[in-house]
Image (cartoon, rainbow, N blue to C red; front, top):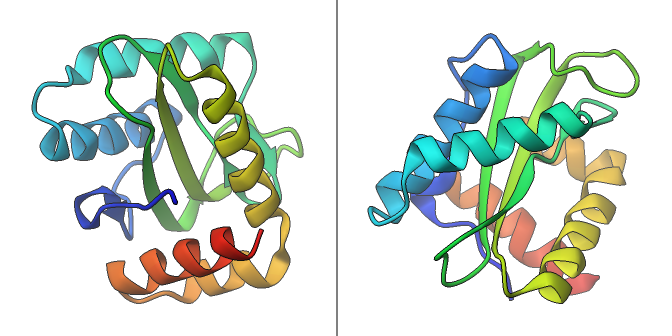
Length: 150
């Protein structure tokens, strides 16, 4: 079961740009896992964004990448009340961000996680609940409950 740690839930992101969002999310991961280098994470995510935007539409982005020396898959959640331009496929602002970081050796689990998170965020009711969530615990419960049901 994948969980989002409390330190990796960022409500009301301060960022106003794609790179700013990625900086905030990677800073949260580094705080949770001090052995992970934020600059390396940022480089991996920005390189992935150059291949194609992870803004999947409907106000959602799922930045992701494979990270050397990571022990397990990590999820990080962020939300923006005002929305952020993220070069999404529908050219609309993004409000919900779920970053997925995976060890290079866990390709199958990585793809499964990406699929689970994508399906979860396709649900309009789930997106609405995530936007209305007022604290980290509510976000954790939504992910825990909804991922368990899938």
